[in-house]
Image (cartoon, rainbow, N blue to C red; front, side, top):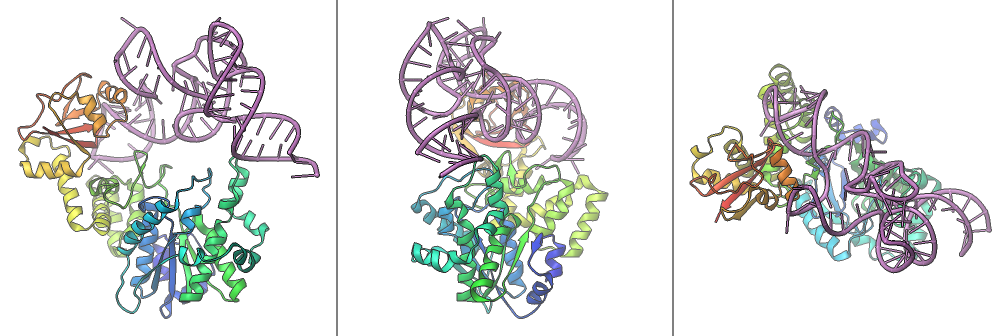
Length: 415
RNA sequence: GGCAAGUUACCCAAGCGGCCAAAGGGAUCUGACUGUAAAUCAGACGUUUUCAACUUCGGGGGUUCGAAUCCCUCACUUGCCA
């Protein structure tokens, strides 16, 4: 198991390797990974953790899915600036959403059934005095200051509040609590969380004289230096209401050649041999994009189900490039447009306004600019008049496909 | 609590009374080239009813014909002192 996750590139840092190796190869252990409700949905960065949890469970180990009802109220220190606090009711609502998402990736049956926990359950009843006496005493300020997340902020001009500074103590306390209640001996998380992970292992060591382990996964980066998990500046969410399965599929399909093999290792359950074969295919026939297609299919069907993945492919096939939109039957076209951002408008609406209504452009000015740049198409016909109206270019089915640039699409239903 | 410096558009950052809708870089978007790729080149990048008007330079108030630029005040950040 250890070799497996190392090969997949899932281990960036960890506690003692030899001990971890034998722990993972031995009888089932209990492990946990936490997710903070700082948004109504998890995103692709969290998916790495979810899939690692799933891999470990498939290997027989027992997962604890923690959603941070209390840590979400505090917020872990980001390298740039202090977070804005969300109110308790909002965070509580998000906890519910995240629990549902986490559940989808874990099995709740059998000997190693997963369990969901919420750190608010043991944090809320704790008094400030008990916290300082029982937990705080184990923490040295010197050590706390040295954590990357803290020192980065201390050295920035944003500084850090006592609230966020305390985050590592809360997360350490979670690990201790889970160690005590569930005999949990391993925590996984992103390598940017390393300081928070070790804060837990250190605390268990001090409070219980026992050793616990942590694995930090690497930060996923694109080979061209841009941020992974963003499309047009927007995060890719796991909630289909926030990122449609179509957009999700497209995101993976557009993966760079130089990144696609690494992505297959991390985000799919393909075997080593299957991935090696795809690596050869990328080198030999890059233009076929077999690896990208397999990646997009596997991840989309894993997250959204095969039906949604198939619908995403059908929509892309219907809309992309082939030109003959009128050759499509109405039902196919309509379901494809429903997958996209869409709007219903009269035929007299200016194209520029439709770009704004569908979210393809942020403002009318930007929409006109796009048209002037020759980047706007209706039903694959370039629009060259900024004042153009939808009238005349509507398909007989009273629908129109709006496109900005090569691949940003939206649907228009004519009323 | 005292003193000092700072808060500029998505991010970094120049500007220090009119020539400022605000230099430069990054990010982003569009076009060309392509494989719904990368690299490269070109253009765009506050809003709008775009030869012009309107709203922006932490918040509020003031001086001035005129303020991102000067003054007062509040908030926040950083550093030094206590």
